[in-house]
Length: 223
Image (cartoon, rainbow, N blue to C red; front, side):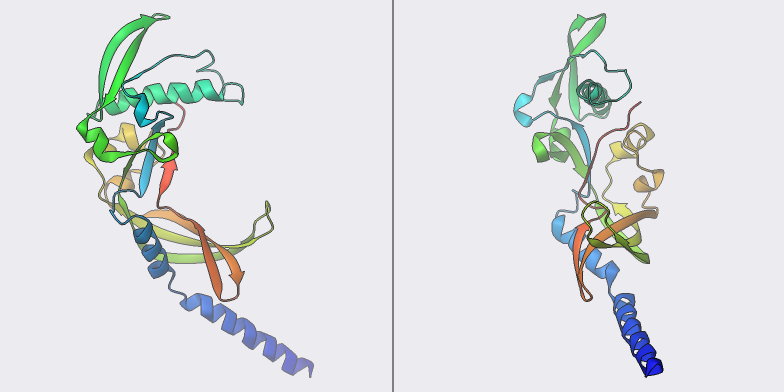
């Protein structure tokens, strides 16, 4: 009896594993990415700053604590510095005009406005200025790992994928841009990149997508 029970459990487990072994992760993930990004130009979004379209022309300002260690107290000043730096950086690639209008604290005050090129890549999600581009192409789904989310107790599945990015603009191919936003050189060359797509496990045969590597919004890293 015990032997039959053991065999039965093994068969159930084998069926369970075989279902997920043959689950078309690459196809499903690709289909989801393309559905959410039909234009093929919104896979990766770089956050310039908390500047809405109505705020242009935008004049920068400086805040105390911009170069102090990041903390809840200095976070606003920290993000303001990143925004000022981002505006200047993207003006070098023609996405903004840059005009010096004054000086304060011995520093120049610049006014920025979007150019036609900047408007081409502009996305105002979350009432911010974001520059978006690209389409994610899933190359493979290699490793599957089930985990328990310690925050909410939900069972989740991590699918480790490799992918590459198409429709990358020339300005993103400059190291000062992709390194600042934490992307590897491969993002500019259609080289393979490692990533993770996460699902919520609803049942043995039902998964719900949580997040992946497409439609991502990313701040610059601190310099």
